[in-house]
Length: 247
Image (cartoon, rainbow, N blue to C red; front, side, top):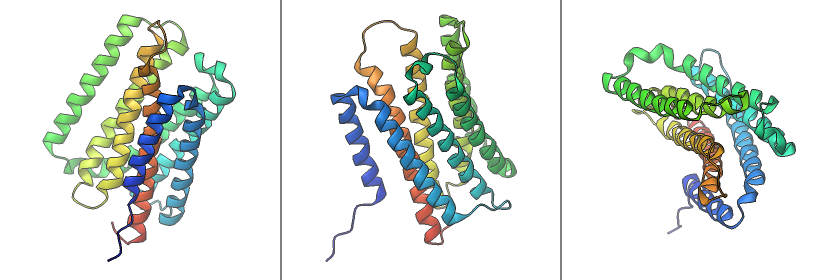
């Protein structure tokens, strides 16, 4: 009997574990690892989009194209911050690329979601509303406590708000596809958003608290990397589904 080869989810889990140990041993490796994982996500995304194609009448292909565009813009912003580390402390073109990436994903998520909004259950709408209100309340309280002054400080709160907006779109989309096989890659994207949200909230908190660098500071960076791994897995699973002629 031939043993079944591990699937992509097993490899993604191993990658997450390896990233964890790398950050424990060398937290400064964040920049290199983040860039490499972003490049990997972009490459797998390009292979996926080239396989499924982009069709104006196919809202799913538009949605995945938007995610790919967002990953590409995130990669550009990370590259700028890597080449010019001093820009991380101020508002810069890197922020413009990153925010544009968020908007690309938000716009295509909205395009995918709107025609099916009436099919959502009341429980999903209620859950989404509660989650969004709670998260925005937490962010708002943090903003009120810190009282950021400059644009660079305000941006630390803008990113978590954008994460919440993406999450607000992802929850109903996950329900829409939950009855088919399409839910697996969407779930991976959902997990990636969770990692991104927690990382952005943690980074904002760390930026406004003084003190020595702790393991938590490495944790936020690690979650960014896990987010890229989750997105890479999402692209891969969607490509495999399309190759097998699944919906």
